[in-house]
Image 1 (cartoon, rainbow, N blue to C red):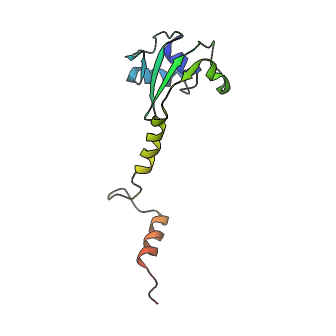
Image 2 (image 1 turned 180 degrees about the vertical axis):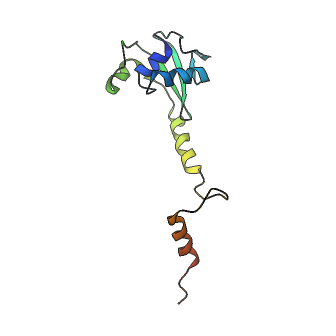
Image 3 (image 1 turned 30 degrees about the vertical axis):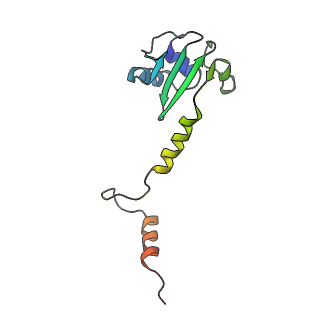
Length: 124
């Protein structure tokens, strides 16, 4: 089975064309080698998929006939992604700056109200 079809069938990508584009960009590796979308996958292969800044590590257990339901995905692959990958993603979300930077457009109504609340302290 082709790698793009396998990733689509095991629900890592929504469409086969998106899986194919990911292979062409180099986001997919099989046994530590960058692969083309037409590369065949066999049981026992180790796949590394970079998606949403997380490196998913998979082991192929079996090949599905076609796209499978979400509950049946674990029959065809073993997910060996370390938990640190998901924890680092959570840290990235917290480290993002939520302050408005100069030149990013007009403030929203909520920004204006927050600014007015900050500057109009009750001195009565």
